Each structure stands twice: as C-alpha cells, then as structure tokens.
Image (tube, helix red, strand yellow):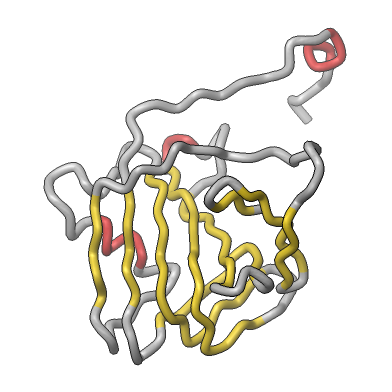
Amino acid sequence: MLLLEGTAYSLSSGRATPITNDNLPFVMVTKYEPEYRHRLPAGSPLTLSTLPDVFKRGSVGASGKNGYVPFSVYGRFARVAVKGGEELRDVKGTMFGIRSPKFASEFSYPGTWCSFLSEDRTRGGKVEEFEAAEEGGVTVEWAVTGRYHLGFPHDPSWHDMDLEA
C-alpha cells in the first residue's frame, strides 16, 4: 500500500488500485515535508542499494544514520522490479519509502523499504530493486525524523496474545 497526496493505493502484481474503504493494513505513516533535495543528472547511477549514499550528500545530519528517513524519488526509471516478479521498464513515476536505522530492527522494518507508483497511477508495487534511467535523471528528496510513535491496541485479546513465538 502507498499513501500519496491523500489517496491510498493497493499495490499488487504490478498494478495500482485506489483503496475505497477504511480497512487499511499495518502502515508506517509520516507527515512528509522534505528537508533535503538532490537532483541526479542524466546518466547518474542510482539503485536501491546506492540510495542511502545520496542522503549523505546533504548537510551535517542529513544522512539520518540514527533516525528514520522518509524519502521520495521521482523521474524516469529504466527498471523497477516489484514484489511478485513484475518488472516495469522505462517508466516515469514516484517512489516513496522509509529508511529505518539498524538499531530499530527489533520493532520496525530494517533498512530501506519503498513502494513505486507510475505517473499515470495504474502500475506499481513494493520495490525490490530499481535503476534510474540514463536519460532525464531523477530527483531525490528526503527528511530526517526526530520522533517515532509506536502504538498498540488496548484490549484484552491483544494483551493476552503470545508474541514471543
């Protein structure tokens, strides 16, 4: 699932569909206001594994090494491999995700997690890997969060559940 500009999208098998009901799965949500911006010119290599290197190009503290880093990457992509085996090629769109600090791996997704939504908002999914296009370049925007709120249900069934398995 991806929440973009107030609309939630279900992302499955390379397709994106607006969600029309109030039943949403577990989500990480942030009020995203980018603090940093870096335009990668055409021909600059960028992949899922090199993305955190871009965060280091900002000012002191921009890498967010010990914080959550919500980010967006938009522009043209040569390839976006999404969960389920779909591969989108030569596609324009927006990637949005969160990079979590290593110490948070016990209670949060460790590392970099993101979803992609095509410019026409019909294709997308959880990103397994991507490559920025040779032509046109991409823009990376990000912020470093200083707060993290983790909420749990407050009812007997939750409190009696065995989570130690």
